[in-house]
Every structure is written in C-alpha cells, then in structure tokens.
Image (cartoon, rainbow, N blue to C red; front, top):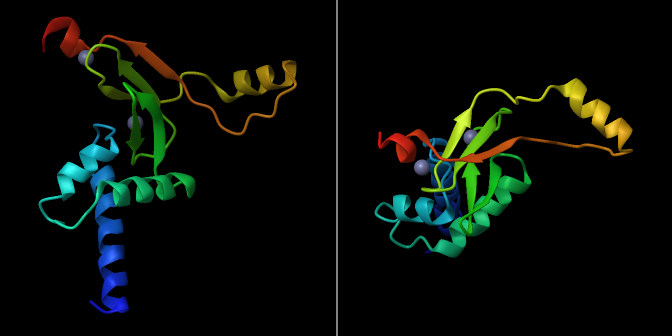
Length: 134
Ligand SMILES: [Zn+2]
Ligand SMILES: [Zn+2]
C-alpha cells in the first residue's frame, strides 16, 4: 500500500466512525462503534476508534455525554439537549431542551463569580423500560 492509498484508507475509516456515531441515538461507546464497523473494516483497531472519537470530541464534531458504567459515551447530536441516564441498564435518553434557562445560568455565574463556558443537565434515574418492562 503506498502512502496516498494509506491516507485514503485512513480518512475512509474516520468518516465511517463519524457516520456510525451520527447514525444512532444510543449514545455509543468506542466499543460499540468498533463492533459496528468491524465487519466492513476488518483491519480497524479499537485504538483507531478511540483516537478518532477523541479528536472529533476535541474539535466539537461530536460531544461526550460523560463516563457511564466506566465507559465514555458519545453523541453525534451537538445541538443543546438534556440527557437522562438509566442507572439500571445504562441507557442514555435524549430529552429535548436544556431545562435550565440561560438567565439562571448567568445569574448563578455572577453570584458565584464564575465564568461559564458551557453547561448541560444530566438526569439520573430508572428508564421506562426498566421500570415497566417496556
Ligand atoms: Zn433502563
Ligand atoms: Zn443526546
């Protein structure tokens, strides 16, 4: 494989990783992305997936929901929204809107003498599926 071909192969994987994260609402882990793409990209390594996800996160292409049950969860939806995390099954569910308004954040920042760059709300509890079995 010459270097241009190597590069093409590299960006093809990079695109596939981004597409996989954007294609799902499950807020995937690196391992989920790896397992999803592996059949189509047999030479893909978990390290490559981790590296690319970290890069996408750093440049704001995707966001991190945080570490849940020891694994970082990613979101291809970068518009501000709230997350609900099920402490039983680990499901991450999107809730539209931010639930706290900008004015409240600004007021708190002023009172506490903070500079707030970004903020989000994370709810914890038991999801409908775990609560009601559906
Ligand atoms: Zn659940
Ligand atoms: Zn989300």
